Amino acid sequence: MSRTTAAVDPSLPDAWEDLVTTALLGTDRRTPAGCVPGPEAPVALLDAVAVATVRRRAGLRPARAAERPRPAPEDPRPPLPPAAARRLTLLLSDRPGTSGGGRRGTAPDLMELLPQWLAAANARGFAAPPAALPALLDAARGRTDLRPAALRFAGPRALWLARLNPDWRFALRSTPGGGTSVPGPDDPEGVERLWQEGLFAERVALLTALRSREPAAARDLLATTWATERAEDRLMFLDSLRTGLGPDDEPFLERALADRSRNVRATAAELLSALPGSALAERMAVRAGACVAVDHTRDVPTIVVEAPHECDAGMERDGVVAKAPAGRGERSWWLGQLVEAAPLDSWPRRLGGRTPQEIVALPVADDWQGELHAAWCRAAVRQRNARWSRALLGEPSAPEAGGPGAVSLAERAKLLDTLGAAERAEWVAGFIETHGLSEAFQLLGVCAVPWAAPLGRAVVDALNIARDAGSYPWSFSGVMGLAERCLDPSEASRLDALLAIPDEPENASPGAGGYWSEAFQRLVTTLRLRAAMLEELSPAGA
Image 1 (cartoon, rainbow, N blue to C red):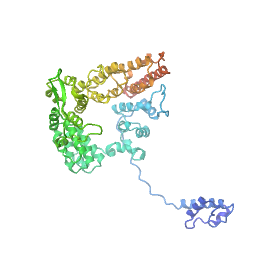
Image 2: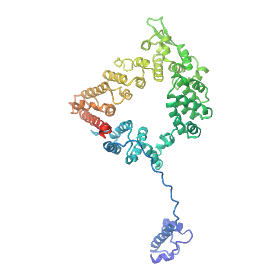
Image 3: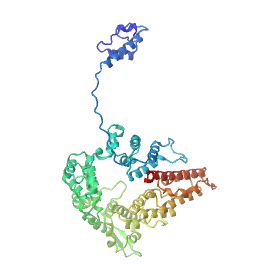
Image 4: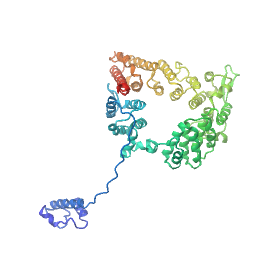
């Protein structure tokens, strides 16, 4: 120790604070206590700090030992096959490119394949490798769309880890109750206790689980506390009744029409209108029927519309919103709400016994067709009425891509979602063959994965036609990305002929041929990778 240190006593009261202040100010402006100014002052300060640091550390009392974490729960599911475990590590280690666009090259986008891999692993009931859980939770933290499948695959150990790392606390929020098990049907006391004492997320999880197995019991449980629940909670609880919605729910929903919350009333009315046999649906049918009729005095039968002149108290009680949005006429706003809530099966008997196709094909007077058909579209989606969906969609080869009733791509996609998977794929394939891919992207998103063979062929053929025509290639990048994830892997061998760089037409976009070759190479590589992924997850791959 330096001889100058002897003059500095670090045990003096407030010595540490004094040393810190001296260090901040500098020894030219202030010297340590007991030391004279000069070139030795900095050395004296450092020596004093060293001594004071040792004294402070030696004087610390050891903290009470923290409670050890409980052991991680066991996961009873079978482990992944080794090849699938290695594949998961590769998928989780991939990171999106840092460039803001541009060409992706021929390498598959592994992170975009992770949702499909997780779905396949969950379908086969495998458990996640413990070593992969941190990377899996990190991936789910960055992508909310991954969370349901990732947390299901991660299993109970993910919740155990989430309680130890704040970065993964989303897993506790994403899993209702943070992993609290929902009492089964053989534990009525546990159900009652959790419903009365549980956190909101736990109660939602309980009601949802109970509704899926015993709809009436879930509704009766909700009724026991309905009057004392907060409005926002009543709305969330009421939304759970969509699962297993049936005629037995009508009395409860009718009472909810008198709720003090406007949002609760609107949700109750929507649910009742999805029950075509409900009293509310019949009231709406009478109101809507008074507004829409067929005029037989014209050269051809024509639908005429007389929209409501007022929104009375009965309409408001049944869920009709009186105030129209900005830029929307009140009468057309009220009409649309009445028509979309009326049972679709009531229209044939009100309009001369015509079928849905015949009704949709009738001309509509005074520019009411768009409003009327749009309301029928919403009704077909709400009531899951496939007959009306087919009528409103029309033939996919119709000259106008919009069909006779649908007025937007979004509505067409919703109508398609009410049809079976095979019929949906066939309709979209016909649409692409007639209208190409420029309007089909949103429709492809509602088709089951992997795409059925006719749909896959239609997409590939349309891409090939666009390539041969020298079309601007980047405008098809979205469809190409969908094809990588949704095309059946068995189609890979059929695409080998498209890998060469084509001759570019005179008016082609510069570099288009190289892009198309690159994109098809990436598509083929991705399809073969998906096939390998599924093989690795199959029992034979184990």
